[in-house]
Image (cartoon, rainbow, N blue to C red; front, side):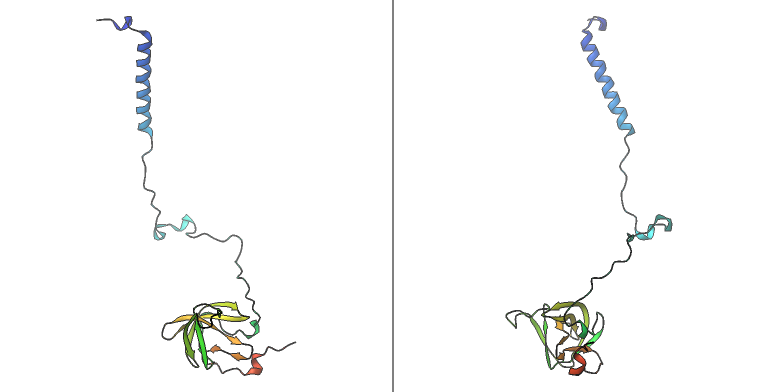
Length: 171
């Protein structure tokens, strides 16, 4: 058997480099950090020194987009108020529009005195203000507040306005 000194020097060098590389790779894996849980703490687990839990607006208050419609002077309703139908008949519609097929989006026909809650709006359509409403029986849809000469929906318990009070005064 041959002595290691009499062997091929390049083979011995290659073997030595391979052993050193294997030891380095093994040693590096010992120092690699172990994965940890990245669960986000619950809001109740946050301390008061951790800062705000929600983003803050640093540019000041956000201004709502102003509502503008040709009948703006006639608008009396707002979201959350109780209202009632003032017209003899009023169509509750699925959208705040009257389509070319007049009856296509009618959800229900309402009668004078029917009580409503304003849940969304206003929307301007056909030069008039429309509100999304909910009836006492739970149906939802859109109703126009007024025509130029007739109040269609009024605040609950409010006296009906006459034609002279519907027309805005000119300065």
